[in-house]
Length: 259
Length: 325
Image (cartoon, rainbow over all chains, first blue to last red; front, side, top):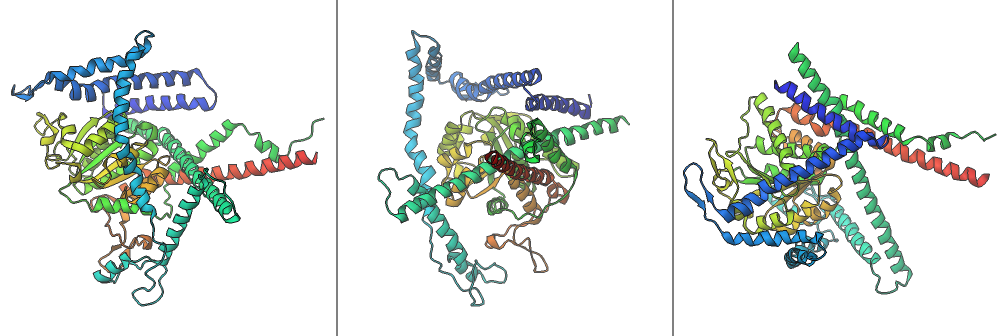
């Protein structure tokens, strides 16, 4: 079979699956159910084979039974039979289906939870430490005059500047940057103030600041939702491109070859 | 006799399937129209491009590809742009998935496609073992990234790959990984993802190497705090990120031409200079996946805005009519 025909067959299956799955937009049809089950079955089967080939075999089995170079016969890795201990621990997870022995499933869960919990201090700091440091933003401008000595709102471009001037300008906080930082700091503080539940907020200023925090949070959620919607559009566009551009081009390629 | 329905009431009652059909037509027709839209790249994308263009040639880039065909519309464009830059600069890379077992087949297809594109243009293809290493998948993001942060050679040690003579050898002996002793030796660590594996990467390896992200629009808002704090040095998000990377590949950032004129000038990123890719055929990057989809993308957004406005006016009018009745 020539590559163009093979590609067309492959793409045609993809097109059928796309139409089948999108048919749910019309109503839940048997076609949709069929392709849904095909996808689930393929994904489950693929995952089991992959789990063995890519994880269990190289990281557990080969370490347990050792490794010999097939061509030279030389020992690549000695066998560490202690790895057998992971098998009963792993199998204990399946006792969850037994009423009598279900307690044993807590052993592997406990091991995983213990490992996970032990790492959380580092994980928390790695996630938020940098962000806490990043929140400390300078809000007072230190650079006001550009290369010509006139007032400069934004950082001057590098064109025509000496390396010393570029280095000097890079260290300064320019007014536009300071305003940005101020907005950022106010947003952080206002959003945090919204989560102050330990005491009653009194005074117009505190209540207003709290309300500002709520508004800013809503704007943030709106932006996140907008980004999510745009992502979904991108996926629809790609499917349409797959059906109406790639598939059509593939048909053309087969016909052109035939002609 | 029932009162006649107003136009607003009729619009409110449109069958959702008609809206789906209009959306499908609105996004399909522009796919056949090769129009370029004037868009300024985001500073996150400019920083990512700048970082990719400044990776030393003797360094290996780590690419963690955690997406499958379900997010092909965004993630394939990201990976294609990333690999085109690395291939054009002859930077070696190691690629693997840390979340989904289906991800390796998807990135293999992308590499195959890019190699076919290179061969068609008379350029040498990127070869497994010599130029890149495909490690397949490691099926636990936390464990994998923890191991990468602690001891990358121990994690990759058991993996083997065929060398240029077809002999199976440990991947650590390959030219791609032989000089990598720890994750800090990587030129850049790029996570192309459609899930929260970028968060895991920040948790486990940020501070140990330069980390960059290419994520879907759904994930991108959660990457921005990491970019703002410097935990991620550059990022491309959603379809806009694909468009940005293609634009930057063709035009560069703040590049001074031989005549002394600054081409593709972006004052917001005045400190950054990165040239366009010289090896790339302009057509490949100026009308690749990002730009091909961009007009459709705008058509969809315009349709959504119209639907939201019309829907809200209709609801307001109907409520007013009910109050009046």
